[in-house]
Length: 281
Ligand code: AMP
Image: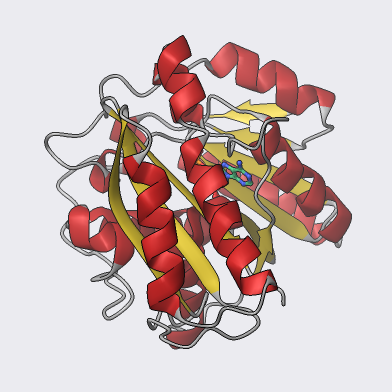
């Protein structure tokens, strides 16, 4: 497994692989890998035969009061985990490699970024779309794999690829959870033991909503109210939003149909967590 920090070297390695007829599958990450990331690496391995994992904590997608400095990092451990998975190439650039000067060209996906997390994290999805565009241009993958955990991100990237005719197939892998239901996230390390327990409210509330739908309820208002109630019972949690929408257009749904997504964001203490479920009907 090659670990490369420079853009020209990545281009060269991918060029060689393409010459050999390989299908390039990219998994973009910010590192501090967990089973959620690994599940995407495995999907990439099933769909392609030259797997590239990028590890880059992208400053462009963090707001001024967000956790860029504290974001957990452990490149050596990540490399060990990816080696074990048979990954071909790890691209782990420094900030200077990705942004040698002020980044003036950005990618904005309008319409999808004003709702949900976008409403509370101005500029975040432009930062995400811009770095993913850069990674696509550097690695030139045939396939790129993202997680449903970051549902709005997946929707934004799919729309960017569609609208800008990018020659890459986007695959979205399901949310991987801890045994008790908490969605895996690099940010879970911020939680102390009380908060870790309290964080279960996200999945519990989503499941409550899902149960209502399974029982025949179709009103988004009813589902939203029941989710809000569940959060009210958890003193360490502060719900930021609950939103029911189409998973690709992110258009709000009033009368719920099969395929709808219920998404929540909440602070548990100082840690902001997100989660969602797709209701398959
Ligand atoms: P991150 O390192 O948090 O930027 O995540 C990198 C990729 O892994 C993104 O496509 C995420 O959606 C995905 N991911 C993060 N957590 C999970 C999870 N629990 N299950 C599935 N995919 C995930």
